[in-house]
Image (cartoon, rainbow, N blue to C red; front, side, top):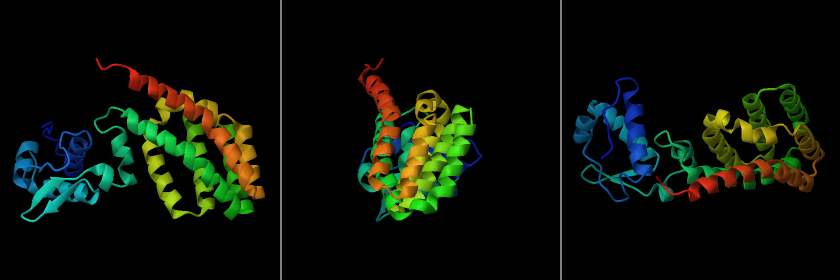
Length: 242
């Protein structure tokens, strides 16, 4: 078992992160029983209340089930967890999970155009000011990371215009998974966030209510950088383990 004693600061958070990492990496398999609360406290060198709080969070995330007799059993997170787990899945032990990164990029590529289409249909001219202002800020920036942040704000407005709570929650979690990697992705993403005319054209299509054109431009905008990143990930996945 990979559990390690944790620092005294943010103890429940640290316990939660260790248990979560052990579940999503397979250290604890579905159906396994976790050690008792008392035993976990001993192994981790923390108090039982800290363990109890962490286990409550793990259960709320859909990773474990507390059964009769207080036995805590690991669940299959792929079937029971929600999108809010994505940021933790992306790098459960500080190392990028390539398969999760690939799935995030694939979701981004397919969700973005549909969201743009819906925004054109449902919001149209109402998005004119926020989108034009964001494109202006994007154009004025010469910092690769800051441009990505402006691009996220742009898509945040588009998602608002789509008026879909499902897409809003998906976007929130995809963004939470993506934001920690902004600096690492700066070089690859600069080819996308530097396409000011494409953002301007997408803005015009959305504001004009042209759903078909908005979808087409969004596909063209998101496609190249996404495919470049997917190619890199596929290459890394094919490399033999050392």
